[in-house]
Amino acid sequence: MARMGIGLSDAGARAFLGSLASRAQDLQPVRADFAEYMVTSVKRNFEAGGRPQGWPPSRRAQLKGGKTLVKTARLQRSILGRVSGETVLVGTNVAYAAAHQFGVSKVVTQQVRAHARRIKVKGKKGKSWVIVRAHTRRVRLNLPARPFLLVHDEDRAYLNRSLLRHLGATQGAGKRSGR
Image (cartoon, rainbow, N blue to C red; front, top):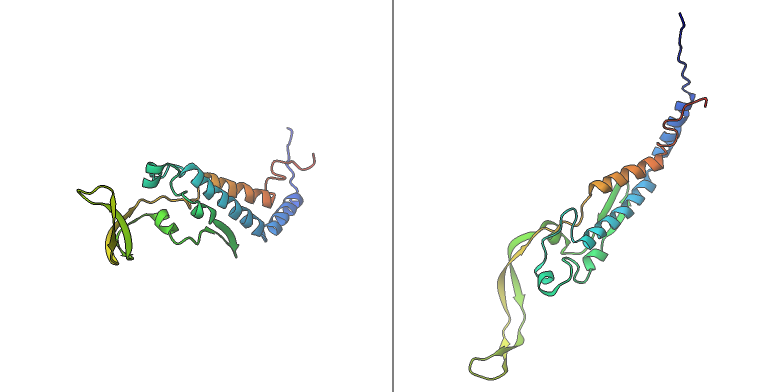
């Protein structure tokens, strides 16, 4: 009766795991890469008018054309990414960003300065100037959510690939010793 034996040498596995552990000590390059990638991903959200589904169009875009959330592109240009310790931060310092990200439905009080306004007067030809006194007015602000700061499935897949590249975890997988 023939006997079969299997022999394993753990030297290769130990070397690979030791190398993997040393590369896992410093993940800053992976974090920096992911921050840069996420800034690009968020900017793609603006270019697409919302991903994975489009944002509700703004009234300005409906009436005058153009893209929603991109009248001056200030919000889009303000997106920055950075690494802080073990955290990747992607965001903006534009004050109205949260209103667009999460939406708003509330009544606000606005201060109106004194100004002159041209109006059409009934029964007269042309327009006349009137003086408007300073006053306050209450306005209902209803802004639908248009989330632009999102982590998509493709972003997570990129992070996984980037991490595996950094760790070199795919190098040596599937190799047989002694061949």
